[in-house]
Amino acid sequence: MKTASFSLVIILLLFGSFLLYDSTQAQSEKNVASHHGGIEVIQRAIEQFQNVKTISSYVRLKCSLFGEEYSGSGFYDEKRLATFLEPAVSPNMFLLVLKFQPDSLVSGSSSSTLKIVANGTDFWKFTNIEGERRQERVELTKVQEILNRTQKVNGKDAKLQPVDVGALATLGGLEATLRQMEKFYDFSSAPVESARLGSESEGLAAWKVSAKLKSAPLAAMVEARGKEKGVLRQTDAYLPTGVCVYFGKDDFFPYRICYFGGVKEDPFADPPTIDLEYLKVSVNGDDIATSRFDYRSENVLIDNLTEEYANRILEQQEEK
Image (cartoon, rainbow, N blue to C red; front, side):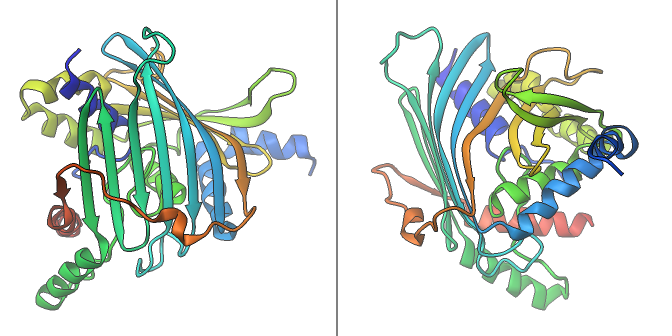
C-alpha cells in the first residue's frame, strides 16, 4: 500500500477533512428507542455539553484500510471555553495524540503518529505516517479577520466555525462533532438499539444509533469525488456514508464512534472503516491547564491553510 494513499485516507476518515460542499425508566427507554428515534438521542447528547467544562480520556482506534487492519491508542483532552453556537472569539481547546500501526507488524515496530492541537488562537495538525511527516496550521485570529473584512463588503455574517465533518470538527471538539453529524447524517430515521460497551454482563449500557449520510451531501460528495483522479479515487470505498455512535444511557456521552465507508445501499453491511472508542472518560474532573494545549512546532515545513480555511467558510455562506 502506498504511503500517500494511507495518509490521505486516515485524515479523510478520522479527523474532519471530507469536504461536504457542503413514567418508569423502562418506559423512558422505550420512548427513546422507538418513538423518537436517533434524533432525540443525539440532541440529548448535544445538550449535555452545555454543562461540560473539561474532558479527559484515553482513546482506542481500529482501522480497516486497503485490506490491512490497523490498531492504535492515545489520549484526548478538551477544555471548553465557549459553546459551539457562540461566536468563536475563544474557540474550545483540545488535544488529541494517537499512535497506530498495522496489526501485521511485529509488536514494538515503528508506529505512525497523529497529533491535533487547538489552543484558542491556532489549530495544528501533525502526522507522521510510515515516515511521511506533515504539519498544518490554521491561524484562527487571522481567519476571523478575513471574515470580518468580507462581512463589511457584502454585509453577510460569516463567523468562525467548523466547516468539516468527521470524528473531530476543527474548532468545537466533541460537541461540534455531534452537531456536524446531526447536520449531515439522517438521525431522524436512524434506528436505536440497546447495547453494551465492554463485557456483555458488566459493560456500559448504551444507545447504539446508526445513521446514513443524507442524500444532498452524499450527492455533492459523489459529484466532487467524480472529478478527482489518481490517488484520491482510491479512497472512494472509504467515503463516510454511514456512522454508528454508542451513547451512554446515563450521560449520553459518545463513548464510541464508528464510520462506515462506500457508496452503497447499506453502508453498514461491512465492518466499520474507522472505530474510535473513548475509555476511562473523566468529565469535569481536575481542571486542565491551558499550557497543556501549547504546541511545539516539529522540524518540518509548515503548511499554512489559513486563507484556504477562511475561503471554505465563505463558500458555505454563499451556498446558504
